Length: 297
Length: 332
Image (cartoon, rainbow over the protein chains, first blue to last red):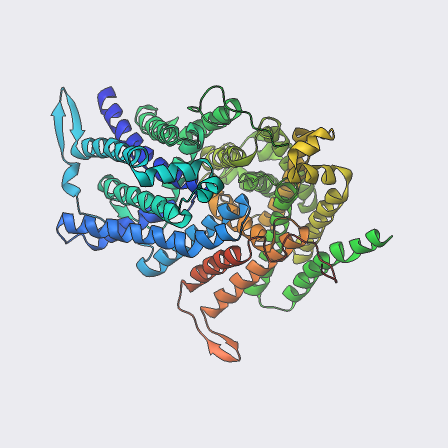
């Protein structure tokens, strides 16, 4: 087995899951809500790409971004804002996002059928060039570079802009931030826009290597990213991103390197490692070592 | 005195509803009968989920693993050994050569489900919140993965049929047993202590309640009920295949519980039966029903409608249909 080959593929997969993890972590940071319907945003983007395969790539990609961001805002406005207002328990919110995910999948099934659609927008990126005996596909380079760029852009938005300051304040202490004049609905809307933007980017990148679009394709992506987010540590964006990267990287690497007899049990190994991490460090692998102990009195 | 009187409707009404479902199933066509039996099985699964989630307030995505283990034991052990030797020659000798009746297999499935839950709970019950949810999900992922590929424990990706089926009364009695056990547990001092830890962990600990031990007890009891429900499921369907016991069942049962109201046994029963009823009605409506007018829905609307109804109820009434209360004649 070629190590270089496996490594580059694994890095690209890791970068992709890192982006998904940031999308989930961003919304969680502000709303304390795990949006399980996040993967359905990625699916929506993939469907737009599939139906615009004949268009010039730039137009298709713009359409994809517009549709996904609109859907993200719709999720927030129609489902999550009323829930937040009603003061639902975290478990209820989580199950409500399941329901939204289920609903969207049912709609995709009804609208687009079970058979699956093929995306051909950026198929050219699957061609490879050779560096030092390693065949590198262009999409690997593009995914890695755009993954890093997206994370850097998100970090800049959070740390360098006024809106980012509001977002961070809301994530730190929502009620106090509101008292100090942060506009709650706008901040939450912004976090959904950014999360939608990231989801659209993932749809563009993901469908190059996996062009088949099906109604439930988003579910495994969400699950793996979510596992990564929790393993990495939910409370900070960069630890969530690292966790997502780690899960994608390990998955990509072991998928290439394990023997064919052991590879069916790969998910068990990953899940076993997840349980171990959670037991040893429930706050996350990359959380600060001396975590604050808050006990309500 | 008044308190013990209140137990009559609180336990009686859910039980009556289950009996009524079984009675109605008897006068229907075969297809509908299967759907009603399925509703009873779902009730048993949701009640088992409730015993842990409702009383402890901790999310578990892993309960379908206990359902799966119960179903596999109950299914494999009631199939004729000669059939098994032919279809699954790699099976572990214990599973391959044993052959028991349906009722012992149900008892066994409860025992196995409880044992598996205890084993899993020993380390996992130290967690709470989201880490607990993800860790229990990881258990489900491992269980599914192993059942899907390991030839020594089952038919792997294939479907095993020829499992003896049982009548609706066995299933109804199984569901009633689950409801009674759940009610007895929540009224016991253990159940009350666990509910105290749900409401205020710090105060409960200060009163000398061990959160870990009480969660572990509830997890084991609910694992046993989930195992039993798995046994009922497999004898209702007559088949097993790993895909029955994965994400779909997990989401559906969780949604039923939250839909009915996570905080009460009545909510668990009502949620399971009402979503099942809706599902069954919409399934009919796709092939035309008469409800005053002829109603025909296009294919595929069933899933969309169920998703929309679930999302809507959760948004408008986040504590569920019952708002987490037990059944009572007077409200307030």
